[in-house]
Image (tube, rainbow, N blue to C red):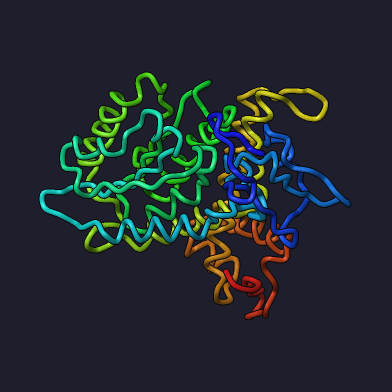
Length: 349
């Protein structure tokens, strides 16, 4: 049976991962990320050994096809909880930032005392929710929180060897810089997201200091463009494109495997150079974000020139993305006006 901090509990009651085999693409990322060897291959399909699964959530936050989720904490429940918490906050004068905290459950048990939030100046708009581990923090959760009205997102977990789940939080640590970069691409300051991993011996003291510093920075930045009384609809549309990009297989695969490749290497034991891998992920980040913008814009038929004018991209770049999206069967040709082909997104966007 799974053991957590020396305590046994029935596997059936554990926070274990489950796989939707209809969505699973058999990419193997979960198999490589799982440090508990809980992912098995049976008849060419992935299976979770619930006797070994620790419920850290690193596979669920990285799954490229969104086929994995935690049994008792599925993605939709986390998002619903985030929205419910933020509905209890208010826009106040003078400005009090609406902050959502994602806290590692084990960090909050062993050092990060969430009751200390009240010691943070102007803390009435701070809300917190727990994840089993920082490894379970899906970048989509951060975007959803800001879309729901958060002025900032603060994530706190255990540092290094203090991680209860064999360093699963390091996968999220590698993603943090890309989350901030995506927010900036959408017109949201990257400083509105902060991830800290605290040594448990220092967690109690540093938690309040770090959170106070974060809220002070948010007060300097002012309300998020989305949480203002008159939200910036252009920023919201761009942020929705970021969310769409974060659900795309290619980008999730690259974000999920970065720390694994740098620390372990590929199947041949070869480790990429950090700079080269960073360039690859950065290029994919831009490409998938732009493709997500195009997909959202193609709810109605449009030509390449119309898309270019609407999104502020060069027509040749738009055409390149449209060709890629057609190859993925996400966009289809739906007509011609004059000499201009019209394209439309396939299915629900």
